Amino acid sequence: PVTAGSIVVPYGHVIGNEKWRGSEIAQRLQGKIRLIFEDGLGLVDFHLSNRTCILYISEADLVAGDEFKRRLVRFRNASSLGGIVIVEKTQISDQYFLAVQKLVVLELGMVLLPVANQGEASQLITQLVSFVREQSKDHNRNPFIRKQCSQLAEPSVFRTVQQIPGVGKTKALLLLQQFGSIHQLCNASVKELELVVGQTVAQQIYTF
Image (cartoon, rainbow, N blue to C red):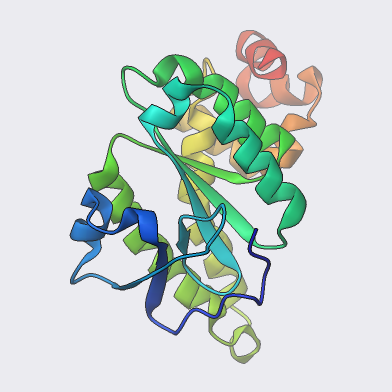
């Protein structure tokens, strides 16, 4: 597995695993970002920067069994990189999604972003690249940039919180305003949750 610092990503580029050459993602990324393909990226599918990478789990991976879980755990144990997991959530793979979410977000503490297909994944990668670029600029110059970054990170967290049974957009927003992060939300007691969303939903969130 690749560790932080061993891959150098040129500014404005993304390094893709050779296996994605000719894929729909690669075709759709053309013209939007500069994509270089390399062999030997190990478990990683795309490197957005020296410190941030993407692990892609396709519908086929989910249906095929537990190999993708082993891959994620191996990555987490061996790598100091920030990993973002993109998962194809389709009608076929939907039944596996909750288990994947539990593993990625709660057990491994990584970011999980569901997409419908490779086309949507390519749009997401383009957005993430510009977000990573913003983050890598010198933060010390501007005291307000930190706040901006945390707001930019919220859409993915927001979408994840909405996946909890009984939580829609409004409740997800209230929960994030109250608890600030998924980690704090996971550790909240039923009583704390009740104050925000009421008894029934609080119990659902706690059980989930």
